[in-house]
Amino acid sequence: MKKVSPPQCLQNAFDANNLGHIDVFEFPDGTRSAADAANAIGCDISDIGKSLVFMTEAGKPVLIIMNGADQVDLNKVASLIGLSIRKADANEVREHTGYAIGGVPPFGHAHPVETLIDAKLLAKETIWLAAGTPKTVFALTPDELRNVTGIETGVTIAV
Image 1 (spheres, rainbow, N blue to C red):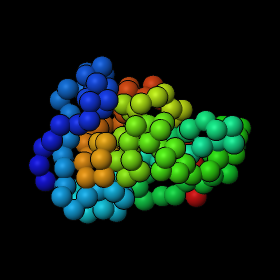
Image 2: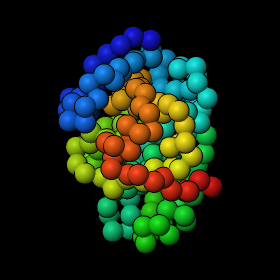
Image 3: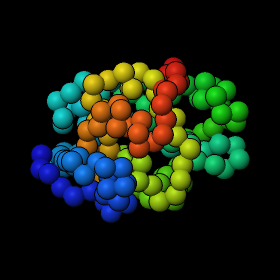
Image 4: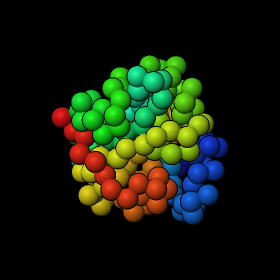
């Protein structure tokens, strides 16, 4: 593990939200999946906030920041937003966020993306999140994640 600089979009988001104290760490074996990240960091998989991009039937992206131990219930999300959704493909993820699958951070995207956060994740003491590449992560408190995203209350969206 070594400390590295985040991609510029993410660094700009850190700076704009008074998160200059956040360190980004790179793990040579990668942090592409929640399990990979938990193994690399040495934390419980539920401490990982996986950023998953979905597309609505209207072609609009939705970012779901999910507890690493759980899976998204597409029907619950569709009920919340009033539109059916599907997983975004790799090109859609990169187009809307500016990042590749496995490295999408919770903010600092190329374009604004509607976001939902899993309620269980917001109950954690520390949340580990992707930092722009499939090998980099950073940690935030739930309050810091709430402040940056503007989302005060998580939603129950797990299977």
